[in-house]
Image 1 (tube, rainbow, N blue to C red):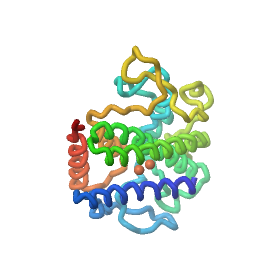
Image 2 (image 1 turned 60 degrees about the vertical axis):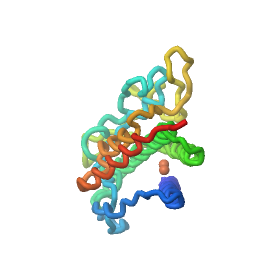
Image 3 (image 1 turned 135 degrees about the vertical axis):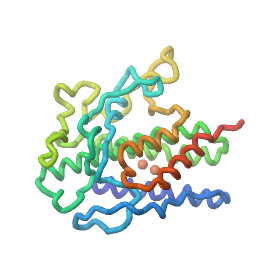
Image 4 (image 1 turned 45 degrees about the horizontal axis):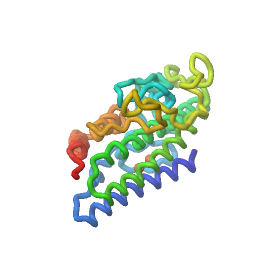
Length: 265
Ligand SMILES: [Fe+2]
Ligand SMILES: [Fe+2]
């Protein structure tokens, strides 16, 4: 898990740095969120005390991608909704990192935090896996299309890795928060094709039209409102809990600009 975290983090920094450098090279505005690094760090031993952009200590993790990518008959682009793999993670607020040294014990409590992180990574990366193909459909310039098509699939690599990792989350109940339960996804009432943990490639499902054969695809990839959808999804999971109104105004502004983009021919 530490290797995956370091690799994934490095990748994301390069995505940010490359896109901003490319924008600069074309004389375009860059996106700089430095002024919003204001959220507190964990005070657990080893955590650097710096301002943070995101809050990883009060997350509400949507785990419906687990069943969405295992469905052979439904697709969110057709309006379908999907059951949660870990229902108790999708309600309330849960730490994905130790908040203080108190969170380091007992063993099942820190494991519950690691399980939360494992599913949270999958949630973030499935979002990125959809976002790039969704926005690629607005791109006119072929070099920009190349950038979007070259970065997007790395998000799918992240997603699949984390989906595999989340599948290894030991079943347990958090002793410090008994409402948080990680069930055995391979056993009844879970189990079966929708939940089994070693099924980490997309099941083929309906795509574009029900009259066409099913297809193994990323979903959703609808382009309408995709950027605002991503901003709302990140906000709803509590990732920016504690951020200022100015931050959310900028986030909405960026999403509106992205959703206003139109492919020209
Ligand atoms: Fe990325
Ligand atoms: Fe990623």
